[in-house]
Length: 194
Ligand SMILES: [Ca+2]
Image (cartoon, rainbow, N blue to C red):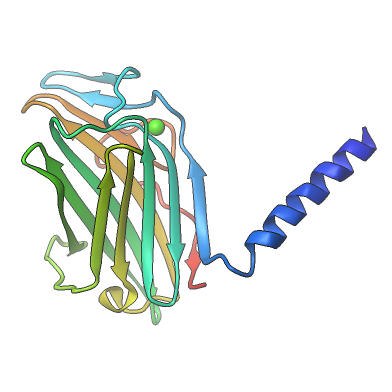
């Protein structure tokens, strides 16, 4: 048993050793499947069958030029409205600033347009925004230039997904913890610039 444990530890070390030099500073989280929450007109409760809002993996990288989040969902389609939100806490000088990267898509605009907002909801003009929704691989990627968020020394990121098929039905998932009550953001640890 001791031998097996040693080999396991060695394999782990090698994996990180290979990835280390080339990889950006980053964070990865595997979110449980089937933990979407439905907020209806009169009720809130679990919606394990829903795949459109169900985040299963979140990855965030922080490089010299940008902060990027990659979110894997169970199965997204272009049929109805989605909101994909990456919330950031950014250490700028001695302060922590808060931002939201907000991407809304729907049947008529499957790629949407990424927007950056301050905590108080005012939009930030930023030419360094980029997003892509891959409906085949079920992956949403958004990125923001570091210069648009004050060139932070570190960021903490929270990611959520929402699927809104009708006015009254609002499916949501918190990408960093089980469950997904709307409006609740769970942040990653500090992700320093790589
Ligand atoms: Ca999930």
